[in-house]
Image (cartoon, rainbow, N blue to C red; front, side, top):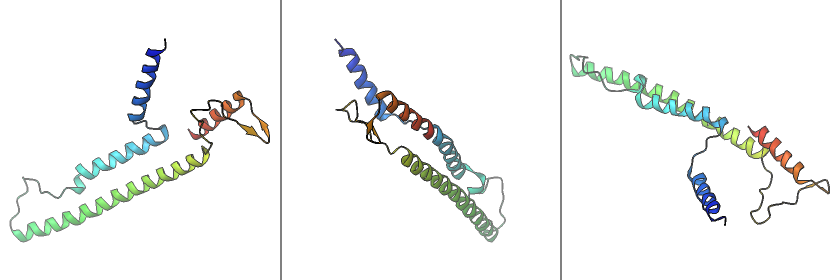
Length: 140
């Protein structure tokens, strides 16, 4: 009787495992990382090619200009990479703090009602659910 619902649940589970879910806390960092990578690829400070309109009188002048451009591009690339490393370090720190906050044991698939105890006394299922919601709100 629940065949359609079970098939729906299976498909939903498959989609959920394949989809990328960005947490609100990481979305800003992801966008900043994307912007830095775009700047690294297409930024004027990292370009080494001389525009076609620039006329170079001699090979020595061209070599000098290329050396200057290479030095400027190297400096710009290093600055962008340092920013990326700082962002990734921040994300790693956030992930470790969130992991420490949510170190509660996961519910077993076989045991839908886990044994939750508080100082020797068992909690009601409602109290356990409320505590889980409070932890989830604290993580956000």
